[in-house]
Image 1: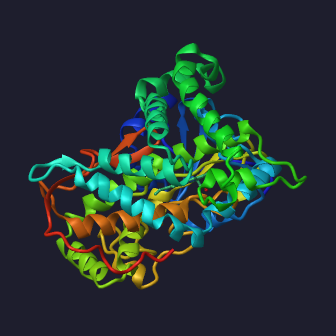
Image 2 (image 1 turned 180 degrees about the vertical axis):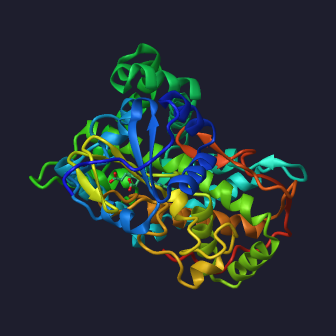
Length: 446
Ligand code: HEM
């Protein structure tokens, strides 16, 4: 196998493929799989050539492949203006590994229990404000929860006033990035030029100033060693040569954690609610088990939600050398895209793939290369345990406090928001307060 080739794909011109990919990603992936099979090629505007992979064996090849050949950071360059050059999401090879090693310990699964109380408290405060008796979207509320949780557990800002200022600046910066017109601008100008553009710097700089202040204050804090927020842990982390992380590195990684962890988890929670209110039996079982002190079923609900409604439909790796995948030698320069969305809908892995059935995760369905909402290999999401833990805590609080029903039977469609897939109406529910009771006696397992 010496000559390289691309798998088949639509022959429509690149701009048309791009428009369809932006407007109807789910329908496009499903059509292409039907027509071309488990490996197909799309051509997306400035992104170049993408080879979609919908076969678990091919996905395994990518996730276990050589990181010198498979560059993920390079494929994420559109995030550069917001995240900065040190971001773990944008680095590759040795530089990526060394940054990732510093960041792994604070996100170790067992550490999550320390954040439970904060997460539950933030969720309760937000749930208190929910409007009752009329349809309203849950995504703004889950977004407020996940932002607040990150500010307290990752940034570790304890002072209420400073938190408010930071919250406002971060929201503005995040909003800037998720506006579709700005996405178009990014595509046209390219990330390097956007990073230097005054209109972008005007939103980024106020947030940066507050973050740098927080870093400086924390460096001098005399209780640094007792604190368990991620920033405090990163301040104590050391590179292999014994040097601490610089302020710029810390700023970039905090921004990375915010951007990677805030809307993703908020949308996953909105989807969980959207699915639950359309499956009253699942909802009833979840409440029963949660009140009895278990969280296995809620965990299965989170996994099933992320299977059927993955927030990201694919992950990307740019090939630095030709690589054989799925029996075909792909040329250097193309981007391979393990397709989360299509893998999760394979009937040979998930019988009745379109059914929302959390029980399948109690029965052991889903494996390293077939349940991949968090990607995989050396690039697997650093916040996977954090996100799943937060989802369980927030759902438990919701179920304990509110009766929830769907304002209409029809499921919400998946629509694109920047690079994520969110419910078209933000996960609409009608909520009523339940009689107050003590919160569930159980704790959520880390
Ligand atoms: C339901 C919520 C989330 C989803 C669906 C999600 C999904 C993903 C995916 C698909 C990737 C790329 C993996 C790959 O290329 O193989 C990723 C990377 C990453 N995620 Fe998440 N994520 C979530 C929440 C979080 C949270 C809460 C944090 C941190 C607070 C976080 C931090 C990161 C980081 C730092 C990376 C880059 C890892 C690397 O390049 O080494 N994510 N995430």
